[in-house]
Amino acid sequence: MNTIYVLGNDVAVAYAAREFARYAKKIASVSLPIRKAKAYTPDAPGIWLGVCAEFTHGKWPKLTPSKWDDGYALKRTADRAQQLLISGTNGRSVLFGVYHYFEHLGARWVRPGPHGELLPSMTGLPIDERLDVTETASYRHRGVCIEGSPSLEHTVNMVDWMAKRRMNSFFLQFRHSGTFWDRWYSRAYNPYYGKPAQLSEADYRELDQKVIAEVKRRGLLLHQVGHGWTAATVGLPHNGWQTTDQEVEPAKKRWLAKLNGQRQLFHQIPINTELCYSYKPAFQALLDTICTYATEHPEVDVLHFWLSDAMNNKCECKHCATLSPADWYARLVNALSERLYQIDPERRFVFLSYFESWWAPEQTVIEGTYGNAILMFAPITRCFRHGLTAKACDDDSSHDGASRERPPLNHAGMPRTNKPFTRLLGKWWEAYTGDSFLFDYYLWSGLHTQVSDVSLAKVIHDDMYALKSLGLSGYVSCQVLRSFWPTGLSMAAMAETTWNRKLRWQALKAAHFQAAYGADAEWVETYLNHLEKLLLGQPQHGGTERLETKPPKQLRALDAFLQAHHVELGARAERASEPVYRESLELLAHMNQFLLMKCQVVLGKTEPSELKQWLLKSERAIHPFLDVPALAAMQIKE
Image 1 (cartoon, rainbow, N blue to C red):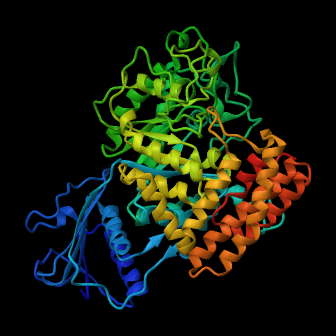
Image 2: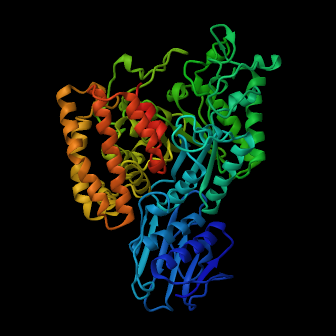
Image 3: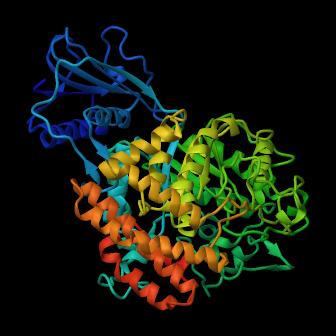
């Protein structure tokens, strides 16, 4: 097996060949040339990579080509000409198959970046071991959406890690993601680390393009935009949540939603402002804005068409009031479906069940004629201490805001428990029967309110398993990209269970802890189990417990536990046998110190400013894995 043969012209297959050669060199000190082949040759020894349609010999592999659905097959037999065959339903799946092969040899990718990989060392690649594997993903959608304050390096490392863990899509919000880039590069939140940089619109777009190039190189699906269409339609800023004093053009002011008798911006935030959808010029202008963008950006595989990012701001004019907000949205979706199909039949677009559109359309069915619409369900105020299908997480009282009946116009509330959300989702299947996925916030709000992530990872695992029973075809995670603190188990649970929903929790956790901590895995699990009992207690539906609400006796017990393990964590990190293990234990030590100081803040022994200063100064060492401003915003009240 001294040559890698590439079949076809798929960019991701070519990248998969380079990755095979790179890891063969790192693991086995083997140098493998890469050659292009016109067709598969059964008797030629080597590593053969190609999309399943390129392997026309015999009945292998049992895969169907697909842009959207992932699966791969690997085959090696001792009685053949020392061949290793790796195929997939598409280019990225071939890449997944390459990574599967090296995982089979013992490689593990615990965290993004070169220091997050654990590689075996061997003399040569084994050639006499029989290998016959075929896997297909449990869910079509397995992605991550940019949030928080990432750098380009953070983002590219995340995209790379996602491909290694068989996630298939990356979502850049807005027309450019400058609102997120600016948080990192301006350094406005942290005077102790990094040099401030003022980026332009051109800089933001260049950063986006560099990320898109990495996404495309791996064959991942690119999602883009989301909120902002309503603002763009009336010519106002639309790439973030900024306020503006800019006036809407007089000719377009009639397009704005009428609220309390006025047509004006909602709280001066353009992307939180709705339009008057019963007014045909506004309805058509919104569709024109989206279609113009779609025509100019053929690189976008999945275009997100969301309405405003606010609630109780819908048009109250007598014509709009004849239909529910979701019915107007459904009319827009039906019209957009036809127009986007005419532009590009392969393009998909997402519409959003969120805020008032949690309540499904009542008079309008979303048509499936063109098969290009995808429902995205976003339960942003859900409980993260329970799974979505947990029977215990229910509050059917009226103050929950989740009545089964649609609330009066502009008087909607937000559910705080999970059962109301699943009831609302169930009603959507009466108006829509197409593709869909969950869009949730475990590693945005959930992680930074709980701090520890083992219980959260269990909730993620349970929810990913349950997606199928809820009628959903996968998951895209709205999250900070630096979310591998303190253990990374949540990200592992997300990636592994969306690929294989039948993967058992104990097996998943044991495999991750072994890869992250080596000989210390059992000790770490015991430490984290005791910590979470003290930190979280029994789940309370509707949210997460905060240290500020704990009685003094419980706080003192937590303080004593953290004090007792402070030195031990550092000692175990120092004697770790692998850099990956050392870094994993250092992340735990950082969490332990943060919680210790937070506990002392609540007990009145330390000022919040001292905790914040320590956290900001620690960013130099911790920034690849923890979104420091997100943690500070949710945990430190000065």
